[in-house]
Length: 395
Image (tube, rainbow, N blue to C red):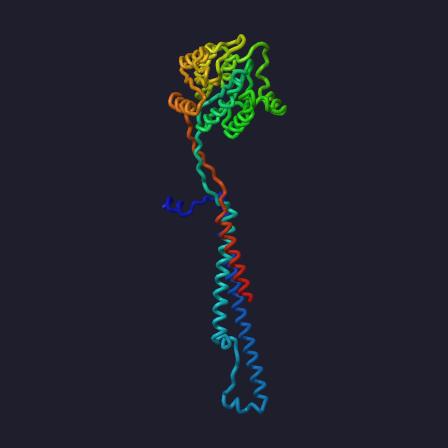
């Protein structure tokens, strides 16, 4: 029975006591109106009867005193007009019935309007269920912006955009590095911000892909690129320190400690969140880094952070020793090494999904929200109908 009622009546009242008070007030008002109307009708009837009786008596007295009307009195032909006889005509009786019907309808509409208004005061509401799916994975996009990799970073950023479009609920961050690192945006699940930042960077670096495009750049574009790269070249005589850049990217993930042997115990401290880094570089090192790529990968592996490699360099150098070294190191540490074309990015997405085992929390949250729309519409319809009928009755 309760289930059927809930299907028919889907609203819940935030202030149900108002309905009880409103119904009591409605019943009391109707009772008072009916009682007053009944009393007035009785008084009106008595007054009318006394008035008619007085008129008849006055008329009889006048007729008795008039000799010219003696024949009428003798023949009992005296006729008295009254309202009941007047209302027995066809047109008049039809108009009276119509007026009575309109009056009853207007009364019903007024009562309904009062009930609906009372219902609105009680704040009709509905329960809305929303399922929230939150991934427990952090992904850091780690981008080499050294001179040898910068011309190819626009393609890498496009790959990152493709990469981001295949995830939902993951926290994503972006860090760029040369001799030092800069966080472009921290770990966030605000995908509109992520896409906006990646699109801006991709558009910005579109002008440094070839020497001819660089020559055509305006001073404003140079300044924008310089501002975006600011903070990545703070060490002299050193560029593309890949191991240092990878460690800086890992530091964006909660629980990672530089050079700590306790990184293996930090996974529990990350609230059981899986962590992954997508490292895009050509593995061309110039200078003496604090961490080699192998040392950086050892640290991330101890911290249970997966590192996947995305080659960002000239296609003719894909089989160079530095590229093959990076490929071997990434794969030996359990990661995936791929080039930056779309097929490779999609392959990387699938492999991450299959091998990382994303932990997902499905939360169903309920919210009680006001839903007065249909009741407001009903109130407007009833009130306008009542006004129309009242105007018609007045005519």
